[in-house]
Amino acid sequence: MDQEANDHHAEVKAYYGETLQTSQDLKTNACTCDATPPGYLRSVLAMIHPEVKAKYYGCGLVIPLQLEGLRVLDLGSGSGQDCFVLSKLIGPQGRVFGVDMTLEQLAVARAHQDYHQKLFGHLVPNLEFLQGEIERLGELNLAPQSFDLVVSNCVVNLANDKRKVFQGVFDLLKEGGEFYFSDVYSDRRIPKDLSEDPLLYGECLSGALYWNDFIALAKEVGFLDPRIVSLGKIAIHQEELQERLGGIGFHSVTVRLIKLKGLEPQCEDYGQALMYKGTLPEAAHLFELDRGHQFPTGRIERVCGNSYRMLKETRFAKHFEFFGDFSRHFGLFPGCGSSLPFEEGEAPGSCC
Image 1 (cartoon, rainbow, N blue to C red):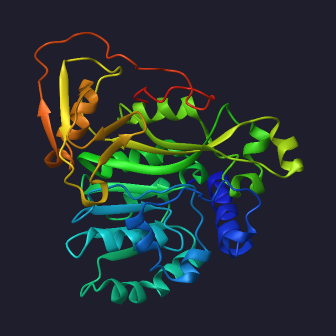
Image 2 (cartoon, helix red, strand yellow; image 1 turned 90 degrees about the vertical axis):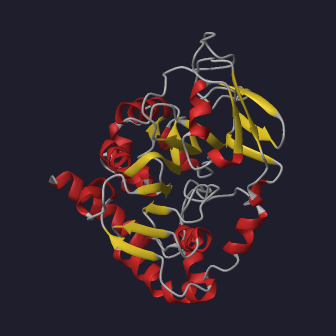
């Protein structure tokens, strides 16, 4: 790794290991999450140790459904909050690995492993914390194509080489696995002088990817149809920071990237449909693939070919009934958009 990357990592480690003592020390709300978790998550979050919560810096909820027995990796696991929640939900047959490069954060997470294991009633540990950089996942002795799910919470923006992060995740995921993560994105490319500012970088702003650059990068690596789960505007309240940022808009976005070969670049119509059975206890009445694809229990819904495959060829298949195949093509599926998702009133019906 070159000296510039080493210096960058040192600055991020210092910010999260020394400058920030708790989430109250943050200068913006970029690394915080105001989303209301569903009831089943609230009950688990209530079990998390207070010190772990105090040192938690996340911008979204990165706990998808159907987790039992999965093998999961958390990038930039920090004080361990998401890992502990995942440890509870995957159960004794699952396995969670948390990766972080900041020793102070890892020390907090490891100090509370036994506490959570006993609280969750796990006879054998199902969680391990590893020291490492998310741009160098190949050096962690993790088997390729061995993970069902990779999550990350407001960390990818801190990486110096984001392509290496996405490529590393893609290589570790099984076919049909997913990268489910929240991060900060900008509505334009960040100028070089801002991207080199340690404060703005540590606050998860100046390392943010321009949205369209993210889409292009994800597809280049092999995540062919990115899906938005949720998004929210980040408010910059300090006048000095507003002035320095020069009108750049930032959004916190939770994204689902599913690894499936052969997904199409557009949403194509093959006359397919599916029906959600309502068999997930945490979503008895409605399943949400993304913010444009919500499936009420018992109602047959038309879907594009990509959405059909994302449910039929993944861990969610047993919760649906499927109708149709790929034998006949009817053209572009209605409602597939291509504009930035951040504009007020922008319809969420696009598949990216």
